[in-house]
Length: 137
Image (cartoon, rainbow, N blue to C red; front, side, top):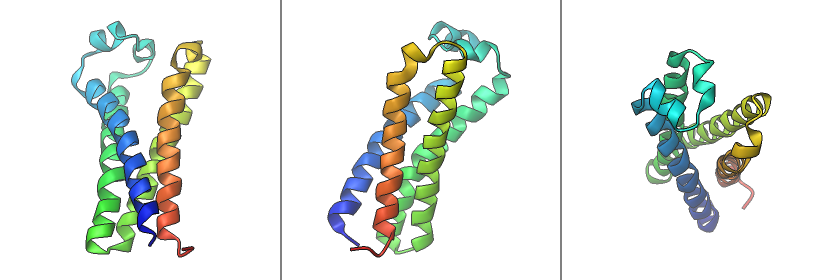
């Protein structure tokens, strides 16, 4: 394993996890009116249980994208690295769906920077973690 690549993967994973954890934590704790007041108009059109599910998936993905690679580095369990890759891919897919939803609602001009930043963080973390697991170096 290339230690420099592993450190870069972990650093980008922490960056992505921070954003997703903050977003998921806010959605999981807030009520519908608070979320609507924060500019999340999409909450009015979807069941509130789905909003809570998205919040908890973001939190779990944020934890998985950081803790799983650390577990692989410390314990040597190779399967743990695959969990981190899956978590990063899931978070990136979440942002693709979020962008599509915001574009359909005409909100993309306000949210594209946040969506792109979180997508890029999750996608780069996934690719770097995958490169660490492949025996290329």
